[in-house]
Length: 352
Image (cartoon, rainbow, N blue to C red; front, side, top):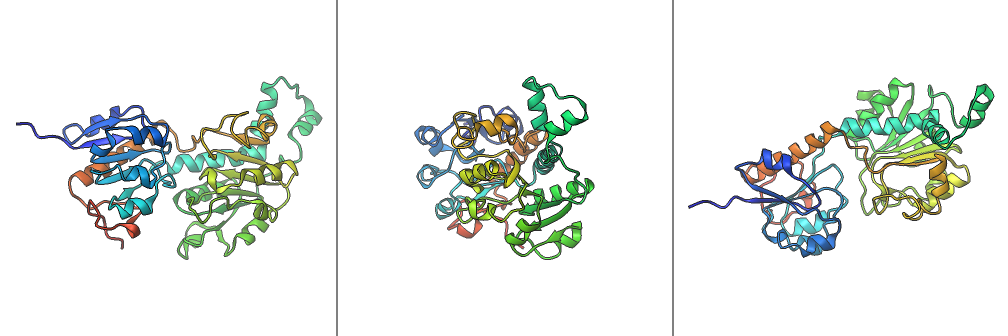
């Protein structure tokens, strides 16, 4: 008589070939390919799954989490977990584990690529050439590149958040000659000394210093829209802004106003409210800000900072490792809702 294998359901993935290969004989793996919460709510597979995996397309609300009747854990395939109501999951006894140790290099590299492009005006000039502009001679180049194309050495990079990705960005930026400062009240004392950067105690201090601001923090209910008109009113005029963290950290209307009045000389966003970002459709950046996007003053990319062939495989492999630990009855690592867990459905690793 055959024994039923447990099941792992990936809510928003469209293929799970690798997961099936890695979990062969351990559990059955299926994917739903859901694009909305409603699609996940309607699935008969959700209540039967022992492990639920989710990327960043579907939001796990209390209503959806209540349908996870058999789930021993949720694997958030990525670092951020703002699309999971971790408190509601904890109250149901469902541990939520993220994958914090993948793609650090890729996101840091992407942040630096955006920062360098802003200072060197690479993307805006490429867009002009692609649009047929004839840019020739020293005066023509100077006019096209404008006053925002400045030397990097000695400029101040201000990091909001200095976890693993923030640290990796800082190390890279120093090589290019940036003076790096960071604001992160949650980081232990001494990190600044360890990697040779400067720490500031308030966000206002960082804003007064920074020639470019780069976001590297989680998004929570408390810091949603933290980049707002009040904060942007305190930055150096002509500052640059880069966001590879979460779109919800930024008040888009305030960002547009700062770009239009010259407070910000340019911005690069890899993350947005209501992804995917679509020009002429995604309000307000893709509608009111469409001309800024087309000119290159506002660069928008499709939440791809995390991606490389290697990082995608790494993330999926690490997500499978978390599932294996759960199914083997081993204590779970990287549990992001430990403080909310009541009668956890699987053992968790005790924090040191």
